[in-house]
Length: 341
Ligand code: NAD
Ligand code: 89V
Image 1: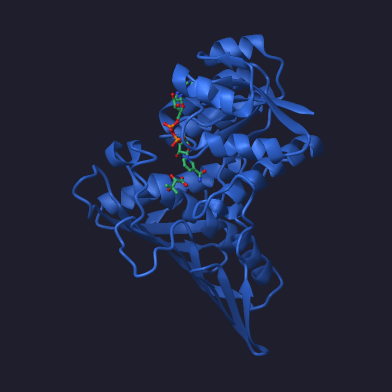
Image 2: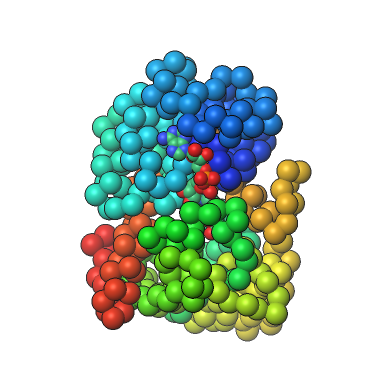
């Protein structure tokens, strides 16, 4: 049994806790949150007795295999470095870091301590995205040459996550990061990116619309677009939609988890709806299933001493896309060549 502690018992951490209860071979034995009310509520909800308001105290007092950091970005570097210093394996929520320098210092700290570091980047672990990847991997549409990963919504995300309305950065750092990671997952690493952003909603501080174009080493050109200001006739939050054109056909992941694959043999339409886990709630159920999948993957990696797919080192490439997108948008959408290319 892998023993873990959760640091940060806020809005999204509740999903982590529900998923940990389903992951065989792992158990959360201690909790930490500097907000006593949230700490008590979560401890009561999940029956965890060992609680702390200070992460250093927790790391000193608990015998742990891993920590799961579910706090917001500005606290990630200190908590990851402390955890590495205590020789425990680490999961850290996205966005991994506020700067590339912080992210590199965090991956270095984990490497120096010889511990596994995974970024909780769960969108690629949604079963609909995995189903699309499986079609591409078996060559159903030949060699992809063009793709689009799109997330367009007008869902009220601000009530559950008020910081999204006041942070200096919004949609690229919060949501774009997920669909940029999906673009890397489907089309491989990118050479260049260009981007444009806009703030439509006057009640928020930063950008709620972003359009990005990537050129991948694989030869694919992809468009990665997101909006929290798009009032559609059918709200599809939080679905990521896909379009991929290949040398032998096309693939479309449509609203309602309909995967349409067309090639010389005809058209197949697959229902790739995610399962509704016992504790999940629509419409968040696809994200909630991916929380279970990525935490399951982390424990499998610890048991096999393998590197997680979204390791700290891998996620540096997704984070660099985020940084480059902001740089491009601030510079008349100029094309940015990526260092990790
Ligand atoms: P939140 O503000 O609701 O919760 C964060 C909690 O961490 C708060 O209770 C706060 O008191 C606690 N905290 C902060 N610093 C701490 C410290 N040093 N020690 C102990 N406790 C500390 O935030 P949230 O909406 O739950 O988001 C948390 C993270 O999860 C963010 O990085 C966000 O981007 C990410 N997130 C990911 C997904 C997803 O994976 N799909 C969805 C939503 C949010
Ligand atoms: O998944 C997330 O990171 C969330 C949301 C779906 C609202 O963007 O912050």
